[in-house]
Image (cartoon, rainbow, N blue to C red; front, side, top):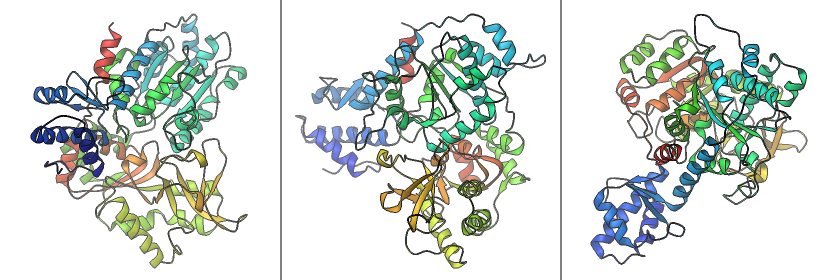
Length: 545
């Protein structure tokens, strides 16, 4: 049965809707309407929404289908005006219940004021947002510390961990995690730097871990299974879990994480609520901060993210189109519109990286050179998309004899992993570089895990991957680069939004260039992402019982 709709449904959407409609007693016209509804639900879920909002007539149609009788066994669940796939209703409901359990636990704190005074210098003329956040969050089992780049989220949580260790009668068992390997590595580097300057004993410093893992590794990802080793039946052993880049965590993963906490554990989420939400369903950090303001602490002063890039990020975040475009058009040392050819600019941008590869420099030096420059695209497809730009750039490198292509794999090819693969401990978003393996006398992909070692994976064992001279802005979350070239599509599309632009801009530490037209840029700034979810409503209701 063909579904007539303005929405471009996938084959999965259509097959799913047909499968369900065949299990109803509807006549032909009702079946068509029911299939449209189910296809929209499937499509909305793939677009990042947890549920589909349905009107009164659609609710009556759903109730008449006979498929909503059992919440445990039905594929569909309707709650008020929200229609869910059963699995995502379970994730959302379970997360709300578990968060409530965290909120109801009282933590007694004695001697906090003296400790706070030791860790934070009193400011006379301004509010110390870090101090205020720690002072309140220490007494809570669940808290969120948010802020843009350079606001000191990591330094704040390091001080908080030290204070909690000093207040505790026994050494706390702490886990530090992030959604991707790159985000985990950044957190680990920042922790090590900040820990050394803490005003506490060496004993306390030693109780703060320096190893950061990915969330999948922490929970115990299992091969060919959506389930983790750790869950409510086999919880994590940690007294405290800290998760960085929490805006990247989707509904399913956050639900499974909170489910795996032991009953008395604390949870601290760090992140920038103005960034893009997760690629998968949900906008968890945004929902949590909106519904639980008394557990959310925003750091408002940036200590290293200043100047033109910050001004542009702030203008985009405030949806001030004219101000943002004027900053780009006027340009400066740090921001501006790219007037030259994108491929030639990439040749210049990656020149030092390719020299390091050809000179057989140390692996860390090669990775550092690669992270100096990155092309970020709004979309995967199209002339300005990731696929096209990577292909054109590789051909240009071959033409200039800067790489030697003999197939998909070649020395110097940077790759990004596109799926979770626990069998080789690689996960979606991990970035590696193809180099010659002297020991095996063949090509291999090399990675720098968060634990500080070197990971080598033979080409034959690599999970699905893509060349990553250019990557999507979504995939860049959790990363920072000295210089970024941001490329927007030449046509408006649903991906473009102010959150996407803000995320791209805040990936650049020193320099940002953009390729875009005013018409597309202005529409993107004015388009704000809004994901359908019932989490806020459930949390507010749960929190006021």
